[in-house]
Amino acid sequence: MDKSNRPFFSNLKCRECGKLYEKKAIHVCEYDFGPLEAAYDYDAIRTSISRAAIESRPQTMWRYRELLPIDGEPTVGAQVGFTPLVKADRLAAKLGIKSLYIKNDTVNYPTLSFKDRVVSVALSRACELGFKVVACASTGNLANSVAANAAAAGLKSYVLIPADLEQGKVLGSLVYGTNVIGIHGPYDQVNRLCSEIAGKYGWGFVNVNLRPYYAEGSKTMGFEICEQLGWRIPRHTVAPMASGSLLTKIHKAYNEFVKVGIVEDAKFSVHGAQATGCAPIAHAMQRGTDIVKPVPKPDTIAKSLAIGTPADGYYAIHAMRQTGGGAEDVTDDEIVDGIKLLAEHAGIFAETAGGVTVACAKKLIASGKIPRDEEAVLCITGHGLKTQEAIAGKCGELRLIKPSLRDFEEQIYNPDMAATA
Amino acid sequence: MNMTDKHRLWLMFPTKLITRPIIWELGKKFEVITNIRQCSVNEEIGLVSLELEGDRDEVKRSIAWLEEQGVKVEPVEINTIEG
Ligand SMILES: Cc1ncc(COP(=O)(O)O)c(C=O)c1O
Ligand SMILES: [Zn+2]
Image 1 (spheres, helix red, strand yellow):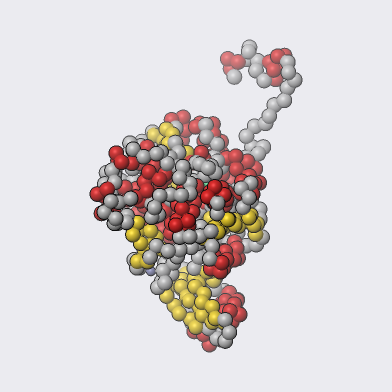
Image 2: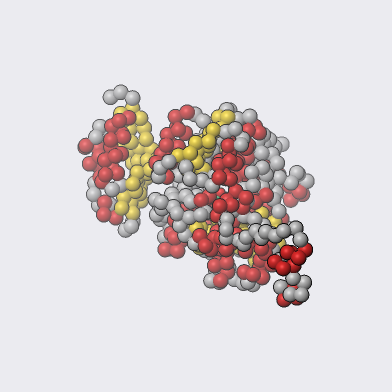
């Protein structure tokens, strides 16, 4: 905490009109219904924060706590974050780019996706605001993370999910003893139900009334990338988009680090990745507009990204345009190829969202939007064990033999042919 | 009127409805108070943020009517489902 007792995190602020609000469980402006966002006292932070101070702290996302929207110390998910940034030379060669890094949030703690970052902030804040029950509506990863972190913190939780999710994601919530509710029906009706529940019961709804806090957690992915690159902003960053929040917040993180004097100002571009079967943001980018047309029936194996009415689509488009970034979308087959490319060339098993990011990066490099002689960081945000259905039967088969050397040499490895194998 | 409710909504008007005074019609047809907070219109789409106040059932009926006319009606929490 700041010794002068001037809080670093000062207010919530309307993104449309700039009106300031108290730091409560609210998320829209009373005047224009614009979204509220956390606001900080950057001057105070600038005089207090330093690279050395950050480096002296535990290797978790909370080492950047001056730029996170809670008042005290984190009480939920204090160990989240600081996942590896991997230099992926073999994948770089394959995609034809000089320098490539993978920000590997497939191994984020505890539920193997970047959502642990946002949930750690949301639930820590929920505890500060006195909530005893927390809830979310999610296509899977967020549900897993709310369930796990709520269990650890002793909060009661409800998670609402679409009725047709992958087994891994359903079990990955149920195991924590949370209330898992599968909802049949079109997404816009599910949305309406959730906003009614959030309004009615006074629960901490992670992505509704706690959204201004929740969303800030994604910034830590951007902070870590800068620190792990030796305190600088990468030239290109590619992020998957569902609501568009992660991309928007990585952009904010880079700008904040410049603002508080932690990194030097440098030209950077953020690029967005979506699946063709649900690409409202990428398609708006490609059409050259900032009007995001809802996708009423998303149809893609990248279920974690299947958000037809992206809440932050407009802001994501502006972040990409303003930084000279681009957006791509890829088919289900390209997503599977992306998962395999990453696994075979970097040894990282990502979920479908990771396949989307790799496949879109490949297109951005091929089209010259990301020049071949520059560097890029790919945000790989969730683990492949959660979406095994997507690649089952598409990456080779188990070969069965008897326990005999003869069988082995006949069917698997023939030393005489090995030179050519 | 019994229980009154305030609903915060986003209305999306397709091109063909942009020139029709739908919110005025709504106020005439139903016992609801309409309060516009923000709007933007271009050649493709019209967006209006609207507070709708009135008896719960009357509000429900007026939303259903808007949808029948071809207006897309969303709570301000446009997207409560996340990844
Ligand atoms: C694995 C994964 N990656 C990326 C995203 C996209 O996040 P956002 O909604 O912030 O765009 C999600 C969920 O939304 C996700 O589950
Ligand atoms: Zn406002």
